[in-house]
Image (cartoon, rainbow, N blue to C red; front, side):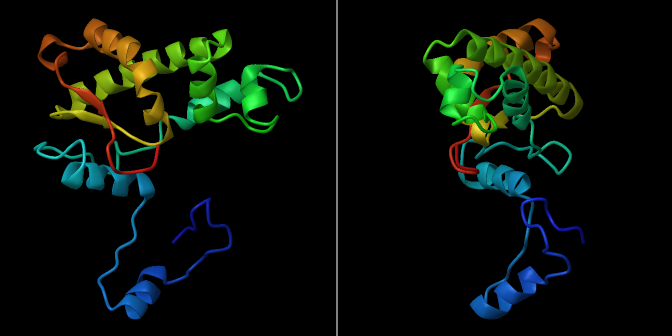
Length: 176
């Protein structure tokens, strides 16, 4: 089993068995995005939905926002994005914070991200016919900024039967 990027050096560690032995409880390890999707379906914003995301669609989409912001700026350039990130890698959270402060570059990045999320969500709607889409992870704390352009993109691109499927922010799952 390959170690996750977040845990370098953790190869062939029987973590589930070790935790199970120490806790005397059943333990199952899962990717954080998949675990968050399950948590939302069972206890959060997705409760009551008859369909649930699988490994193929419970993924990491929002890290691209931070990558684009980092590429757009340079350390020491005085931009709001680099100031908020203390001149290191800019994250989606920094972009949302700068956009809330009215920063033009951040607002443009949010608009671009909302458009691409809307296109991706439309594709998911057409492929999987879910009852709803629950948007989680770090980007969900910017839901209020993303909602209108995201919904506009879905209205523009989705087949009529899918235009009213709700897109909601997570309520449990991964911390925002």
